[in-house]
Length: 457
Image 1: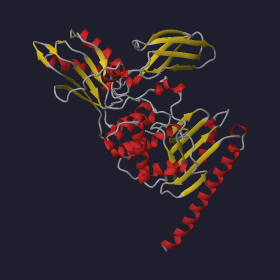
Image 2 (image 1 turned 180 degrees about the vertical axis):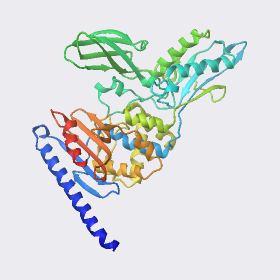
Image 3 (image 1 turned 45 degrees about the vertical axis):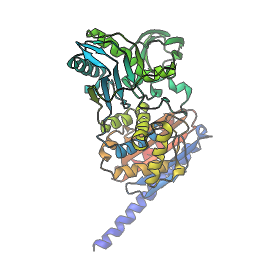
């Protein structure tokens, strides 16, 4: 009896799936025949929660995916590093302490903690780290530092941004590089009234500004140009007249700005520094050498939030800094070579080992900012299906924002948009999907894709 009852149920489900597929096909044809899509490319793939194909359009075509690239980085980091992984920042010294005087150098170093001094975590804000540091210094008996204050940023290699990032992204907050020691998410804010700079969230030491801002329009159309370790910065573009706008940029040398800030904090607490304030790579740029932080005489160990919390913000607010730090961290932890090339190769090998065709995952970075990323919608769905079977899935899923009534990650670069995620329809059908649209010129690209995805509701 039960066998015969299953037959109409299977027929009903098959008919429903065919109906959804037909609706998706109709919506795709409408969008791809629009004038805005004359030279556009679309990769679209939908499956049910078991991986059965519902619909695809160029599902294996590799396109610039933008920030949905973060799906691959998040899953691989959660699996290879573990959701409880924590970054570590330490303070230590060389030499000896005698009568309150440190006759040696004072060091701060890290294994690339991207959350150090971040405002996103209640217990990890800049003031928290500085307070813990002062407490540790006083407990150690140090009242004066006769040597240098050195931020040892040597944990990663010198290259702080992937080679494929566009120049007009590098100086903006979303283009912040990743360093061996990061600080305040390597971001600063500028308050601008019309085209006049009024104040900074913190002063960039030894940076000369060129202001080419113009006033006009009703929204922020400005760009900041800074380069890693550069002492020249420019802001141009257009901002609305008659009101204060906050524009966020990428700090060119976060380790040095941390060093300068720490020296000021020490002096405010009556602890003087007689020597130089510098970093490992700053000395290298000057043709000098400086010792790395000692493994002994550690007076403070400061741990980051756990990786599950970092991944949450990585996905929810699409923080590119986190993605590139995770790429280098996996490269260091798994292949002992902390550079982008090694990390990206590791990422591709990881997904190849999970059964994804390597021809469909041509990665260029860990965040998706590079237009040189070419990934297919089918590969993204395969990654999402893989994550669904893992014990860290709840952590991963929680980071996805709700957009247009669907739990999905979005990605945006010039004239391109992507969405990938999970959705349960009103009928109870569970879908896993990815859609990537490149070179859609004019009009609302998000609304165009929402119209397609509405068929899954």
